[in-house]
Amino acid sequence: MTSEFTENDYIAALIELHEGAAFKGPGDKDFSRSLMASLPGLPPNPRIADLGCGSGVMTLLLAENFAGKVKAVDLSADFIEELRRDIAAAGLGDRVEAICADMGALEWPPASLDLIWSEGAAYNLGFERALTLWRPLLAPGGLAVISELSWFSDARPGPVLDYWQAAYPVMGSEADNQAHAGRAGFEVLEVRRLPPESWWRNYYDPLKARMQQVERTPAMAAVIEETNTEMDLFRRFSDAYGYSFYVLRAA
Image (cartoon, rainbow, N blue to C red):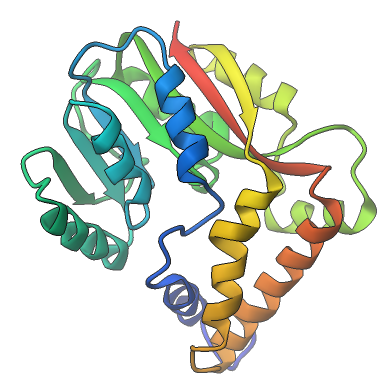
């Protein structure tokens, strides 16, 4: 950060840039809906948590696809307020609870969940640490669907390797993350990659449009520059990395 703004200014600008966007990170409703439909062995009314839910686009999809109750957790009060408005508008107040809290410090009873869903958020804790913290919350045989930024192969072009070593130095390969899941007490059922077109259609293209609407404070200018760098790298190297969805069962 420069002397023109603080880290808090940068975070506030980052949140502002994402305001009003359905997706706060790469994702796709049809992709996630397909994953939900394929999950094995859930009870008729599963107890569900969407951790790092953002403004809740997947929270509402979980409520649409399952009959159980959904707890949605995010540390951003702004995102949670967005979700609460959407819950009220959808008439889901009796089935969905939006909670502003740290997903890494949940004081919930052991074995109190049947399904944990988390898209693009585990990196805030570190993938293995997130799984280790969340594993006790699952009932025996419970499921977790966690997306994580992952290397797809050992061929890692210099520009993108340099960028992610600085931005997310613990980013692992799919094999690394499957090993992390095993150490955290999970059996890996499936690994599925989010298609590159989902990144553009639902995340990057709306962000580009939003960039034209926000006031370019020094902090916002820095956020936009960083986002443009990230988009350019993904445009050039999306065959080398992306979001992998890990479908896990409590072992």
